Amino acid sequence: MARGIEGRAFIGGKLTDSASGDVLTSYSPIDGRPLAEVASCGVADVNIAVDSARAAFQDRRWAGLDPSERKRVLLTFAEKIEHHCEELALLETLDMGKPITDSLHCDVRATARTFRWYAEAIDKVYDEIAPAPTSALALITREPLGVVAAVVPWNFPMIMAAWKIAPALAAGNSVILKPAEQSSLTAIRLAVLAAEAGIPAGVFNVVPGYGTVAGKALGLHMDVDGVFFTGSTEVGKHFLEYSGRSNMKKVGLECGGKSAHIILSDCSVLDEAARAAAEAIFFNQGEMCTAGSRLVIDRRIKDQVVGMILAHADTMQPMDPLDPACRLGAMVDETHTERVMGYIDAGRREGGLVIKGGGRANPVDGGCYIEPTIFDNVNNSMRIAREEIFGPVLSIITIDSVEEAVRIANDSPYGLAAAVWSDNVNTIHTVSRSLRAGVVYANCYDADDITVPFGGYRQSGIGRDKSLHAFDKYTEMKTTWLQIR
Image 1 (cartoon, rainbow, N blue to C red):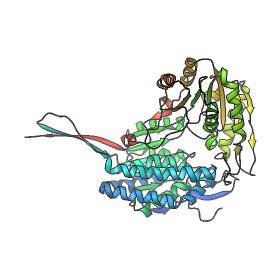
Image 2: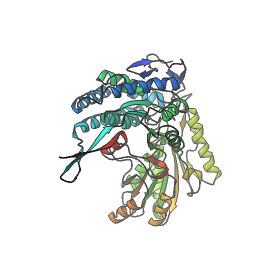
Image 3: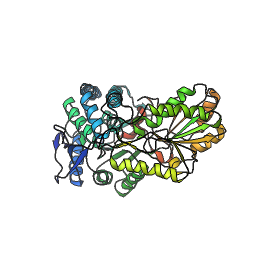
Image 4: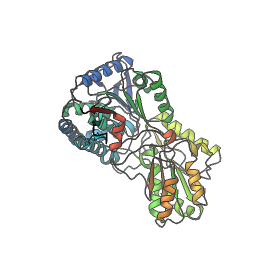
């Protein structure tokens, strides 16, 4: 067991064991070593956290602060995240297996930037006065929702948490964070840093544990005003059910994806498109809801582009995630590794042709690694083309027209992201408007920032993370009609 790694819950402003004393062991997917014993919170712990959050909200120790003061505290929090960047990056990589360079330069920086951006927004977002009759004054104001639960996944533990916690805190809510059981360590550390930055006790709580226990308890709790989840569509549907069975709490969902990455024959920067296609599926080991897992490519350029993607894949072979040169790290755990390998086996059975990878790798003994894998000869009815694999597995689907590309891209239960490459601006706009996806990348992939909303259509979710639109989830809108006499 690694020394000095904190695994206790953070409730009411202090670190605490679970009420039952139960723990779960966090193992590193890098080499299978145990990292820490993490509190396995249950219903009793969730009840204590909700009571703590409710008390903090009711006495307005956070919601009642001047906007400038909440801004100051959140900016201090962002500074602390940056000050502890190496520690947080190491925890992230040890816990879920991503390359240390990505943890350091992507995850920690994006987390700090998110808190800073929402802190700066606090005193720049105004309420409204409606154009009511001259005999009245009609005010439209936003108020914090109350007690907010954020249930986040293991693929980007800090970033996904920040996307929810930052706007929720900026709006004045009290927050309970339930990290994934596979990756709880940075969430606990962030809670300690938040307290050091001045966020009052009870305002930000962390209850690690199993989703089927702690996550479900938050979803069913009668005194939680909203639950906001990122993860699989299957689990997202449970939170809709929990809301209906309890107090009709507000629900926000960012769920699965099966993104189509379209490259058309009139694209003149095929080298850029090929590099983007490789990174879109192999970055973060393919453990991304926006992963460009379906390459929808024109037959006339297919061989040329696929050849370049194969060359890029050669440079993204699994390595020790702690090596700064690593570009493809470990899968999050053995269970997920076996799941992804099951999809690779299914792709072969259904007639897909493996032209790259297709097996496990072993750069570090005891770890969880999969080769970057590319399937050719895929049609859109195969499981590997329809179901979210969440691993480094690319399916190539060949098309002969723009219309066919759009039809295949939209033939999915998901609608999170999509991309199109073309030199024709009319084609770009026509295809972008036709794609049923919440995010469309044009002549790029995964290129955005905190200023734009993120979320999907259909079974990819409800609501949006990021940008000022995120405040819609964490606030209630109130109309006050004053009759002037």
